[in-house]
Image (cartoon, rainbow, N blue to C red; front, side, top):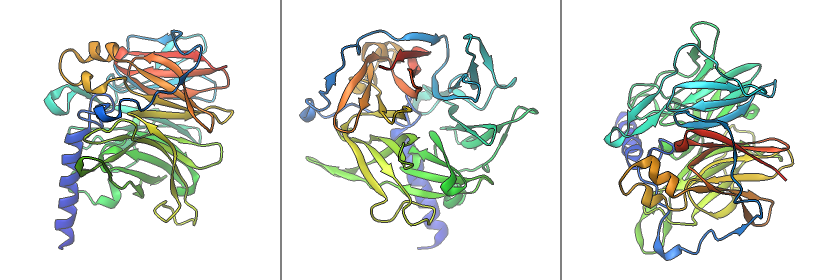
Length: 366
């Protein structure tokens, strides 16, 4: 096939895929449902004694808070996706914006103009602050940026559109982790079912492309959609996943990813392995300093959330949860969490972005 035709075909596929799965919760899933009735018993994990305790509000009144990070001074950084801001919450709980100008964002984008796009994840590297912007608008906003003194931020990766070379483009980047193995970062890109390697000069190449999978009683293959990404205590990269249509419950996975042969990708045999299985609608993961893995599941009934009515009310009525994984079986660490999409663990505290509640909350780790 003519290489240009192949390029256009792949980009059309990615555009169609974004329309099919990019949604309000992540700008990555147009209607992620919790799923098939045949698997309703999936995910019945043991509930920790303190799981039902309400979180302490760190900051509220935000518009779709998502990615979380800590700066060198121990201040909490928040990517406010719908507000187009990177916020700093000081140790005294003062809330400041890292830039004077708003960052690229949109409140009315995606299918039916109902969804939000903007900064979704933060990286601190070499004394600088970087952030990822996902997009649904086709206006070349999907890029990696750095914070500067003037004019406030600048792009690291080039502007891309549907006809940009596939080896040097984002589709809909979501989360980011520092990655010395590629001299930069690894970025999850749900729009392409992939992890992308980005070097310090902004060059992009495929790091992992996830294969589709099949489920019983459904002829078409199901998409494996990467979301939250984190560095594990063993040095490997871990990434959570959603699933595409028909949204089978219990089929989301946390993957372990490692470049074993030093060729700057993880596409060879044995380099991508399932780490935790039997999960549903994973939106983020994080490791605590002790190596414990925390996993955010978006909702107890995502299908109902998307069936109509007020979206914010629906997410409140069908909350998600955060699981704790100690190496054998998940337990429910925090229950009844409204639309969790960002996690950050310290020695004593788990911070949670509750996106459609407009707040970041915290819970003690014990």
